[in-house]
Length: 203
Image (cartoon, rainbow, N blue to C red; front, top):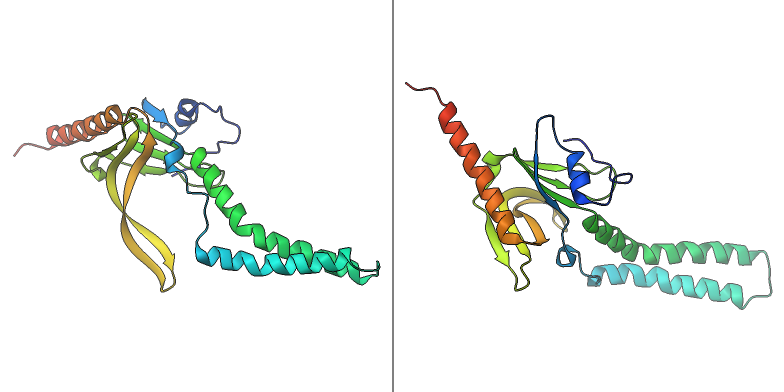
């Protein structure tokens, strides 16, 4: 699946989606995930522990620079302090990048497939053909937004025990007009099933 560079595209998700279409393919719907799809601005205990040690080391080293008499070793303390501070802030930087990536993601329905175009350059789009789709399931919210789960896919995750594969939901998360999107996915799946039946040779 080709990578879709969004850095020079219009901010309109429909314009970004059209750049990913194949010849003869038609856009049905495109939108971005809402705030509920973004990772929470909080770090787990391990991330806090990783950040705490270099942070306090940075404070100590930088304090040595402030409290010193201006010797050549101050440059070493300053460089080491800045380095420790960068290491301490790296979990927050990674979280910020993850939020930005979700904000720039585009969900797409065409007359041939579903697409998830991830935000950020260099990341591959995910494509789901009609035969890969399950019957869409809706997690509705009171405001008309919600999630549409349309497939189950294997997902590889890095854990303390090593890399593990598990089944995960493929979904359009926190989208507007969720019922209409579910109907469009169901229509795509049904139409493709009908076309396969018609195309089968008769005995």
